[in-house]
Image 1 (cartoon, rainbow, N blue to C red):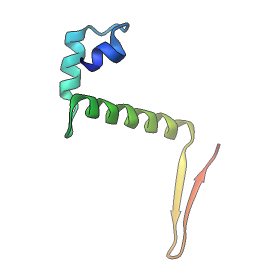
Image 2 (tube, one colour; image 1 turned 45 degrees about the vertical axis):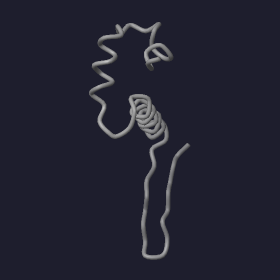
Image 3 (tube, rainbow, N blue to C red; image 1 turned 30 degrees about the vertical axis):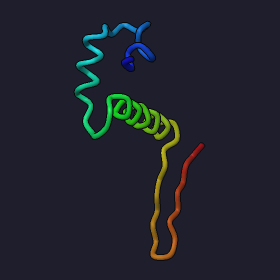
Length: 68
């Protein structure tokens, strides 16, 4: 069973275009592992856009500031 059947069958991409896009993902592992990694990256990017974070490093401390 492909990821298409599990996740995408009701969306606008046709299965052929989806498989081509999936093959274009870089990295090691199965298609499902690469897809899951891509989803995690998208979620992290979305989170960082909603809550920008600043990191201030000193010799003794690391400060992380997130305005939420």
